[in-house]
Length: 64
Image 1: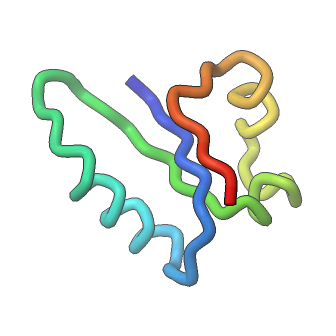
Image 2: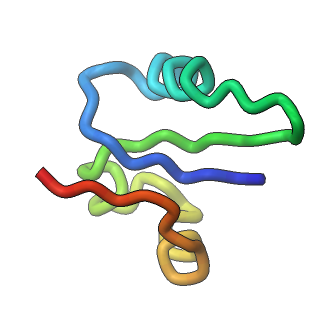
């Protein structure tokens, strides 16, 4: 299962990924995470972001 996690963070991309993997400790199936800041998504830094945002499902969303 693949996840796009969008969150504000001062961490570098690799550090963000490590932090999210630590929180998601489900080991029953393979999971891949792409962790991006909102700015990275808006600026189009992620090549697959458009596809993910159009075809993916929002599993959790929090504002503020």
